[in-house]
Length: 264
Image (cartoon, rainbow, N blue to C red; front, side):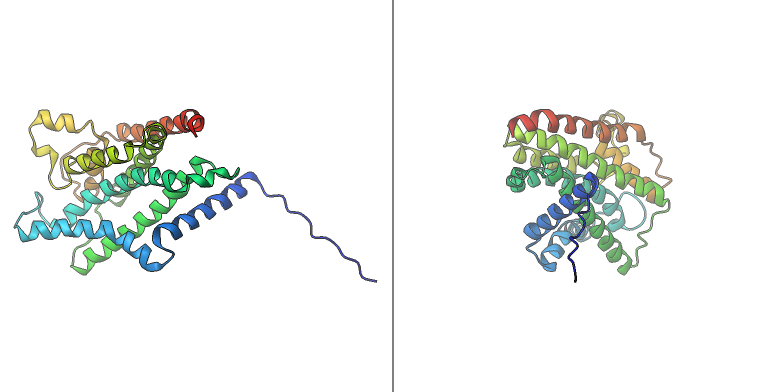
């Protein structure tokens, strides 16, 4: 006589459940943004890559040389990559809340979960784009490996941290001022044009350069460039940049817990 033994219920820890929630949000985010196809992901990844090399092509056609010896493409990439990483990670957090807010009606999903899922997707997308940039540079005979890899990677990670922190603050602002999504676009364009991507800020008058150094984006770009040009003759306040990243993230989390949840 056979007898049926029911399967034992496996208790999952809160962290395991949270990981499943983030994984599901990431999959949904990728399917909705990339059209559920590899071509959609390819287009999104190649957009910032095309942006970088379009600028390089314009400079080459117009005969504008980089301010440093060596490849113009490498010089532009060392400035544009960290700037775009910050820009996309800080901006996409707002889009995640705007497009996926109905998911928060499920008790397992919080607004911050949407930010985390979108941030992870952006990190993967940014890393993939970085590999593509490296591959294109290598195809043109340009060595994309920095002289000091740890220095360059540190600057890249600082851009990711600052993007996460400012993105969290943007979500808080967007919760009571929806027009900030357009306003922040103007802010990022201004930062992009004035952060030293196409030029070296230290060649400007000292008063202007000192004022520019208050921008963490300027220092992040210099941080990455020091990995490629160790003899550049500039100094980076690493604690200042990291403080900006951690400080903005702390403020963003406080806003999410107080302001955003009350207005949700």
